[in-house]
Length: 322
Length: 314
Image (spheres, rainbow over the protein chains, first blue to last red):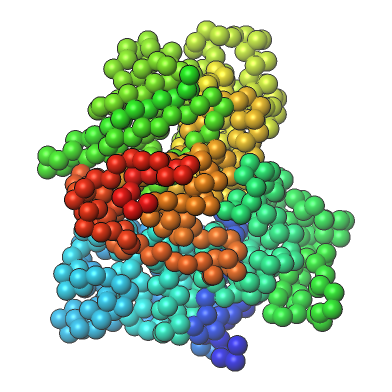
């Protein structure tokens, strides 16, 4: 990746009251690249996305770190300036497209709004964008309201309005979770094509390892507010280095496994932020944990080939240089 | 005798503007003793309506639903009550399935208590045994649902469904609301319970990998009808209906190598409204191989290899 990254998140920490939610999360995304942040409920993936957009709920504060967009730190700029960033340099799409769209405004006007223009002035451009996101019969759809469209079509509309201003970064928070599988496949193909054609850096927030395997170039696995493991998608799936990633992948039923065989199980449960100890947050559930894991936080360290892991027990495979 | 025998089931709801919504429009299937049948399909295909009709929560507009030989359609309250002891249901959301003001011991013991099957110390013992059977501790019976995680609550719901030792368990998306690692625990538990008790299961899900993991036979629904019904291995290794093929191709597999090499079977458009299903084969508006005949003539149900398929071209 020779391109300068479109987005750099450095050492991001978030807290609610005294409890830390996200602790030292960092990653970067290049133009045209899809970076997945994957994890189970409560791991901090969605608040990380909200922090990048500066859309955190009032109760959650950023306690550390920087967010660089095209090299410029946006984590401390005034809200007024941030409004120019959102929708222009950086856009976001959500899980529930019908809830995210304005029910009283035609889809054409909503897309035009992202260009800060009345629809009449940019109608041609909006029609081109509708065609580009695969809306059939755009001349009719442009004047319809969201309730007249299906969930899959609304997600295409949201993507159109997010991308028409050609932002450098798109944050996609569970964009296909509410959709049926055949529609999900269409939307994932669309996102991948648009990311490459428009050289948009995509941060994909998801819980679904199948979606990650389908579309992400690189991935970061989050657990209890920290990155457990990060690197190229193909390599992590082929040989996960963090015990959490390995167990998570082994717990998924696959079309290739033996039916009714026992799936891998992660004993216990994710700790609450108030229960975080000084050590690795996965230690209490980890089959490889020892005394050091409970006492000391393992740093996210490089394993070579762009891979990182936060585990004392993950050694690089033989023959590779860290 | 089959545990469940559904023949020509139709469930229609009144729709806006006159035309009824044909949620289920002619479904036949059976489940043998000890067998698990998967019912898969996308939103609105009618799979949950079939499961609700199976336990008598909805009455059929037409057709027959028999549990252990007893007809549910038009049955009296007493018959329905007796049947519900034999056919128990596990829903998707364990949070809304449990009364927050009842201890979990009361919840699990309620079916036994209201039917006068156990009380006092005997009830306590049975509840304790049920909790242990699903991997919880008997001495947690006095706790409330909010003190448990989502996965534990689904275990409580399963324990309650097992209390009357049903012949048929109807699971409607039982793991869809759970995290990946918790989902594995509940699937392991369901497989283990099936092996131990030999009950029949109707397993409704949109997730084809999950269905393959727990089921013996699989029925694929589209717009109120079954389009293909086959033994598990036949369905997954040699799907016959173009919709089954498209569904399987659309499942994102958690393996970048196979996933990215997989041929795409792009389905055009969206699922039509069940209030106004297309003539001929209901799938023809999205089918990649449809011919003229599919647009006018409804495909008959026929055997192709080990599968039963409703397609002119299968």
